[in-house]
Image (tube, rainbow, N blue to C red; front, side, top):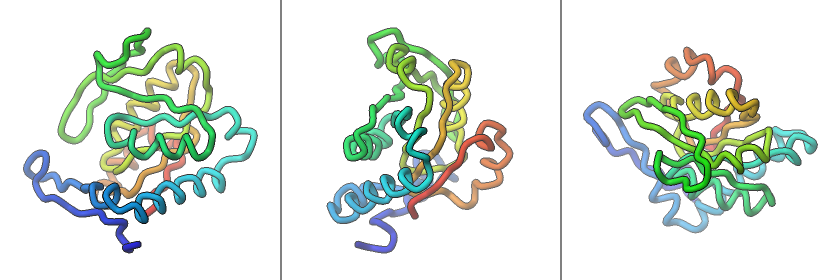
Length: 178
């Protein structure tokens, strides 16, 4: 397994000035991908008390978050709740707005699935400004739900100041595997 889990940086993508962290190398290398999933599972077991874990579900945003959240949910035997862009949830969507570093859009969660759980473990690939995570946390809190742990493959160090100035992110314990 490589030290960097196969991550590469693509400069000026998707817009000029943004350096995109590409996880395709991680996904293409079974050893790295398995190690990443195992590390997520170990962090969850280490960070959350058993009683909290019993009430939790994995929540993950499309699209790359799905690739990481699904095997973790499977391995830990936890429910999986998907956050999708508007128009993709057919059953009673709960719609909310997200603004991140280069885009803004509406997202949604299946209301029936959301109602089943009180605690969520958020899994996604890259923690940049944290605005997707913050938007999902704010949407969940309006429904009396909370993110008890947020996990990412890695974070963008240059954007730490933006994350630290976002009130919703101060409530969430956040960890990265690399």
